[in-house]
Length: 95
Image (tube, rainbow, N blue to C red; front, side, top):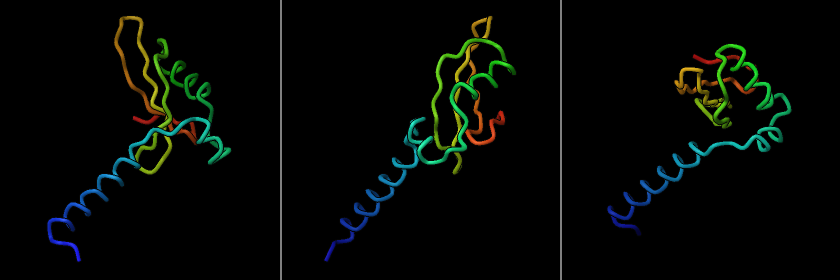
């Protein structure tokens, strides 16, 4: 039988493991295998450039609030860096 301290440590470990799984970025390849309706990185980047202009610095496919989202960092002509989120299914810019 586990002591009170051991039970507490075990519970804390389970919570930490669960949180670490929820914050793992999703690779584009894994998303393509999970759902054929996910837009490509190029499509997401194109939407962002059409709306904001600037140059793309990075693109990551992440899970955010139970949905797949592209997190795209852009730099404007004046040097301002901005992170923009795009719904990976609809292509809608999220604000």
